[in-house]
Length: 296
Image (cartoon, rainbow, N blue to C red; front, side):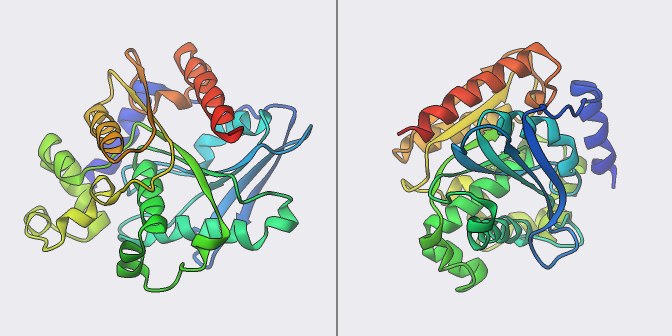
């Protein structure tokens, strides 16, 4: 796949090699099974000192066909060092599993947290979802499915109905995300994004445009006023920055509290290169936003 190689190249151009330094005041555990698929594996991070302010479910990006939770360990560790329990997941990648499996994996992870809340020592009344790049797509779609019974039933039947009563999504942080597939298909070269669409949806480009329910393939089209407060982070050198602008506008039109954070000098997923100053500023803003929502 040409696009899979390009994803790795673009990441190195914008971010280089990211160190993964876990703060000393954080306890972490790797390789935790949260579901039945072999890719249902997670990392866990929690503060060693003090209580837990909230729970964060983190979903990595990678253009639907690549990526791994391991590259976000420093990011998750810093969140944990400021009082948050962080659960960072892998999920089945396309084309081995196609839409909506990564979304159901996200919901499986939430169900795992609900099922094991007492053992983990967490309160699932204050849960946040965060994702980067394609992880934003999965996070936003999972929230929309939890908020809309019709969307949920269409994709999963009654599989996750009880989950909506057991867990409360307080907010989400979405970094350099993809939310509107139509715009992405029109914006990016077909040999790049068309490859991702073919692998993730199992549809050729012409089949995508002829899809009878194409609107439902974009989370931006199915969100409503029940969506929680959102922090949308985007960057000037990111080729998908228009997606974030559209998402902010859509959320505000729906009456949702949407806070945009723009980094003019950043590239795609700049927030993960935490040895760089602009990523540190973004993290500081994220923590301030989190604390504000958590303390309401």
